[in-house]
Image (tube, rainbow, N blue to C red; front, side, top):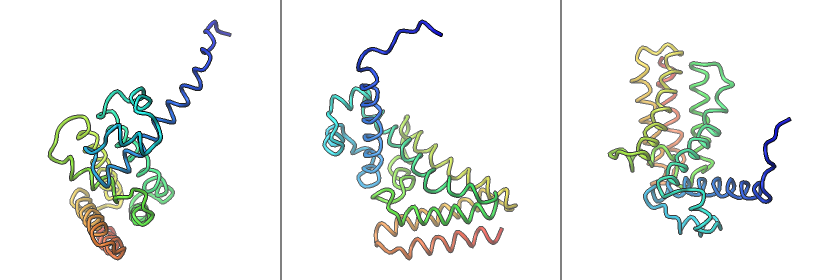
Length: 201
């Protein structure tokens, strides 16, 4: 038993509304970033697209940078959900690398983000910048590369960093060409070339 005071009337409802606003805004901001860039995100646009008021959004997020950081965090969650988590059932090393590549193609084909791969689009936008948002974008891309390197190490690659570079380069090129030309064959080409790196280990 404790003597903690009971929640104030309505506090749970306010918290639930705040959580819903946070989720909706972060999701919409992440989607917007892949088409128009993180820099185009505004409170007004997000209010229009999510149905939440500007004041409600600013109650949850202190400023635009906080929204941009939430967008990167939301993109990370979606990437983990669609690409990484489904691969973890496969044994580490070559089988998991195959699963990661399969899930990556499925993620792009499913149009999880309207503008393609979040990592690719934001890396180009923020590659030359500094600050908290650039750091978050860099960390997301870096975590993906480190995952590839770790699995390549487990697959006994002679040079995990170089092989991870090649795989990532194929996937990024395919993302860009798929968005430009709309040809899903570009994704299959990247899958085949990246798989060639894996099977050569």
